[in-house]
Length: 504
Image (cartoon, rainbow, N blue to C red; front, side, top):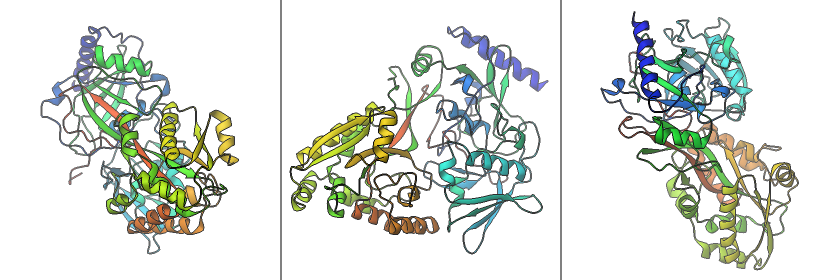
């Protein structure tokens, strides 16, 4: 009977929204996920409110296959990982009941909570976790955080998952907020999950229904009974649906060329994306041959102006190669490398490079990055260098960066949640463009993974040697209907982040 009432309620929600001018005919299930936030309990009457969300139905909601940020918003409502990480990078167990770390910090054994179930009532097993993590390791979205994972296996009795790393790693759980789905559904377009909501489909349309027999207890940032899903067509279409057609939540990327401004009444939240913008040097450059001049680049970057002028405030200025919101970012150390153009000019003069010509490579496929690079180039010119912009895209950019056809380049990558820099400094590392692989720096990366207190030494070496010049970390923008959400603190990979209550 409750099930029938729930379906009727959802039908009423869709019909009421249809009166706003949106056609809900022809829907099939879809959804997705992203996010990570430090949330607070919802208002007691929130479950009586209609809250609508959106998705691109053709992209599905498989957490390993779908990289679209709009679809990924829903994942934290549908799926759970072994752990969850909040906006301050604090990690707490969810599906994980207990775990052990070997004395050498290389073997981690994770045992699941016995009462955890998927939305169809089947228990979440170690086999499900094993197959999900293997699927994640092969995915474009999660493979980067698997760099130091040597193997994933099941214990002999198949009650636990064993992860072996190729180096000492004290904080592996921060990488394991990866959504878990049933073993048989790792390649499905719409796998089921163990989260507080389940995807449903009716002749009227798709919606998320709150589970009445959820396996755990938690204070959620959203608790409405049913969430109708609008079908997204385009970024501008999502903006129009938010402004005119009753959409209540939209996650957007202000660093994207496709971003469109919202001009209506809304509440606005920052959501960290983990995307890192930085300057790299060519070790073969005749100009940046010394660490003194490379390390002085940081003084030529007016990060705050870049954030406000080009990134619309949706970014975090960073003078160290880690998110300023993470515990790995030492503010005292960071303060030594801020904008000081006179120091850069003095370094150019001291190196005898005044008037020297440099090539500044930037990917022209990203117009925002091009504008930021041109702004940086002006400061470099004011400091005494002659800068030639090399703005190329596609395979031309890929070839130019591989062939080291630059003195400096403006790069962008998504760092893993533990801010691992290994890919920059490992021999033949995926990000070691310009020949910046460095045995000493790589060793410091491994020491930082073994003990996060060592990030200070790593970052100081990176900055003093000029191995990288950090610029900023990009944020997503989350628009919500005013008054519907209370105390959201969205963060990377989980905008609806929550922690289980003690008795779960």
